[in-house]
Image (cartoon, rainbow, N blue to C red; front, side):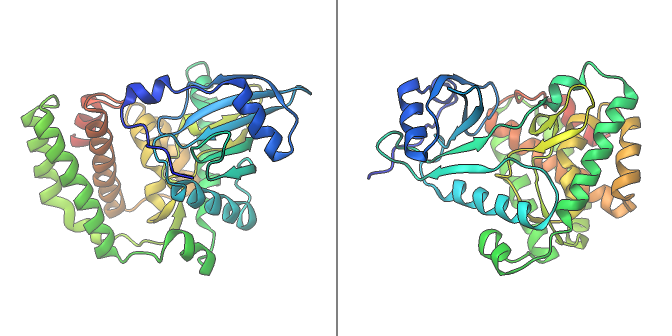
Length: 319
């Protein structure tokens, strides 16, 4: 079967939809009761995510790799999830059916257990400081558990051998300079802001080489990838391991740093008390790593990102 062309534009992606008969055919192949309804979920900026309600009332998630028609990305995430479920207690839903593409749906796709609760970002705005601390403390424990996974042949086969500190620094520099180049061409972020970013990077980039690349990290650990019980605020599941890699353990806090800690720095204390306090050198590395991340995202969107990252996020990192 010829792989379909990936959807290249944001408009193509957000308009992508699936019919109920297609979902029913996929479930039939998987030996799962036919769904009675399907709807596109407003989450997933790389994959198309659909919620299926089965005839018995149970729910499943159908995840489709429409932006990448090769199944390599899907298989990589599948492998990471198997390691996580086997080697630690971080809760993440089972993948109950995986296909590289078939007559029902040509794109790579997977049926996933539905994680109960609600997305963390949905409850965040409605809860107080202490409840937010409760969620962040759980995040720190889950990260520590994930980072405790030991390296083995199967981990290396999926994620590759850990980079040296100098290799990791080079990869960060390539991402930073690539993003800055794109943003200069786009023009919208402003020359002065990009000049300040470059000056900070040039002055302090050497510190990146001191970081130890020592853990399996999620690297997309933010509120919308957490499922939380809205009553108890217990963390039910961590979703989306598609960006998992071997990296310095403390950099797994990057997206929480960008989305939460920069706007309310006082709330970060509970997280670091549980995770482990950073050294001054690690704090500097985290700032540079976060800067490369946000510039990369802004360049990809050619403007502010849907999750809220924008020029203000960049300026806070430059303070």
